[in-house]
Length: 381
Image (cartoon, rainbow, N blue to C red):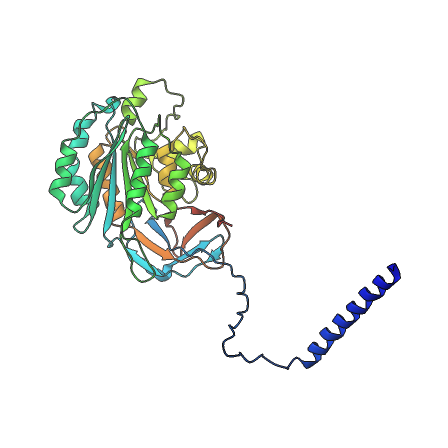
């Protein structure tokens, strides 16, 4: 009985194989004609890799050997690389694009004596920084973060709100306030390949300290870079803070008169009191800025405003000695309206992670300052 069953199985398998071979021989060459009423089976779609396309804007400040702004350069004078790959500049401008500005102001109790000076800066902000086609919004912070005013081009409204700034509580949620400002700016018309859009600027008036924020500085800077936000800051109580605490560092006395320097500047830099202090203390703000963006969740306690401005191509101005808040804001406005703006869509470098930007000018004896780069997250799988 067992032998009969095995013979039956072998015979059935042989018949099935013969039928398969016969059908294979009868199969027509070339594509099969669709039959009426029979749905056509579609070929599977080929797998594709989608790369995120972004437009990178970088403000570029160019100064001569004496520190003066240079305004006579053309697009052909600039070369920009992304991770070492030269990019094609799609848009070039010199200070004429309308700006969207978020003014972030500390109103904690520790800056109470500074508030009267801040209240007098409204007209300077609207006329010197914002310009005739600009718009501004105001964010205040202490123990809380509040949007005091949304974007408006009404200069009177902006000046009135600045005049009426009130003293707040003891908290200093600086990073949370900066995060809100970046989020607000990300909603303004940005640059595209066809249109330049609005320049996005975050102007911070605060003491360089944060307590109680949920946001981390590196996270804020990473988002600011991707949204093409340039950060400027004015240290509103640097002098008072310096007088009220023990000095950890004192620069050696120079043999030259105040305001002059006894030795040449570090290569590729313009000499200022701030740059000289950084030179003596060994602070490398550019490296710190790159580190902060790369390690977005890390805690940063030293030089946060200087790092923020360096990471986005802006500048930090401390109100030291005779440097008043009004003078500092005036300098910010002068630089903003004298900057070159370069835009490009990255090609040849689509890797996630940190992208280093370098801008070079084909002229001698000029100092170039631009944002150092940006960070791209790996695409979700």
